[in-house]
Length: 264
Image 1: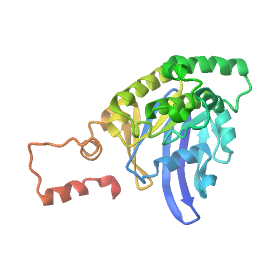
Image 2: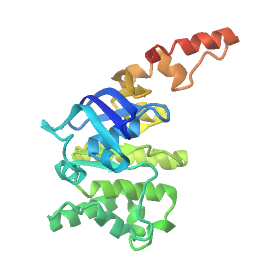
Image 3: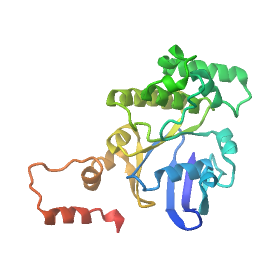
Image 4: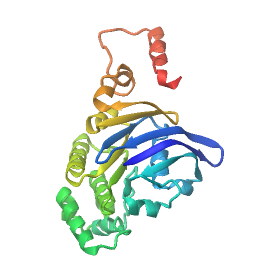
């Protein structure tokens, strides 16, 4: 469904942020993009959705295809109409609008009013708390409720692919679990593909089917999530799983750092 091929992104004509990124999201797929702060995950999402221009970014090389059609030279509103949407980091709800008004903003590219009304009802089915507070200003929602609102707003565009940027950020574990359970239902019932950007590797790998790991603007490792979770380096550096019975000397620590062979 989505194919990103060897893209390079430069900010302010100087800073090379993405260095030949390639990834794919199959139809109805759930794919994770993992990495530390500054690895280039959010920039990848912005490149896909055509948002680089707003931050002096430029796609210098490579191409991006969606449903077999090139989209890397299209404006973001055209890309949304084709079926890609983004749940941004930090939720970014419109605090001076009500819950319903926020949701309707997500449908601004659609003209099928009857289907929009039907979609609104489906979102209230997924997120019952939003229906209870539909006339309330979004500034008064909790962080978890705002995240639900951001997901609902993205769904209002009737996407084939939903991209989520750090949806677990700042949320309590129980709220995070609830949101990811709903995302599973959305993927299963509406056949909406998901590209998930997360720093919490454990959550992302348990949720997704395929994963890519980024370091310093490059894809350094990819594979089925079940296999990635068994990879010794992923366990060491992303899942925090170590042999607690073994005492490590300073020399050992240096050796483990060298084991991050994808940085070489």
